[in-house]
Amino acid sequence: MFTGLVEALGTVRSLTEEGDAKRLVVEVPTEFLEGASPSKRLGDSVAINGCCLTVVAADGVLWSFQAGHETLAKTNLGRLNVGNVVNLERAMPADGRFGGHIVQGHVDGVGRVTAIDSRSEFADYTFEVPAALAAQMVEKGSVAVDGISLTLMRVTATSFQVMLIPHTLAVTTLGRRQVGDEVNIETDVLAKYVAKLLARAASAESVK
Image (cartoon, rainbow, N blue to C red; front, top):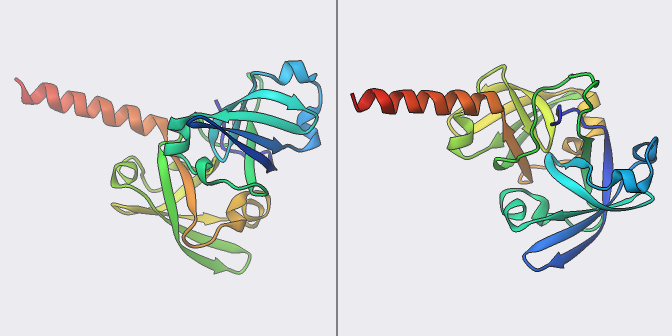
């Protein structure tokens, strides 16, 4: 599980096709190396742009991950290029501080930046998303965009808007995003459970 609080930025150093999958080698910050030998890093979960991947090899600051066909189809990881910067968050430790919201690292789909309205050092970002994802969002609720926990400011049938503070713009990839860019979207897992329970209740009522 993750919290949506990005720890650092990494850089894609290589991409290798492995059948219908890809191997990503990401250069991670040195603080990711503290307190663990390479063997202990293997099998760790890391959210890359909000997508939970497993460390399959670690050579100093170069960590390797494998993304399967489902991941490549449902996220923007399949469009990464060597040199791209990505958001990184390690899985939350049991004794960690919960500063964001419950983020599973299971991306629901891809959205697109449709507007950026800069306000001094702040900025309002608008994203277009599939209607099924927008239906799981509520104003003042939470959403993960490229793994970043954000508060929803406005929600329509096919879009949402958030306000970004200078810190978020400076330490995450959103500060580098432009209109037209694709982003990974994970809606609040609590909204998914509520929607499913309500649908079951409505279905049961209809057959009475």
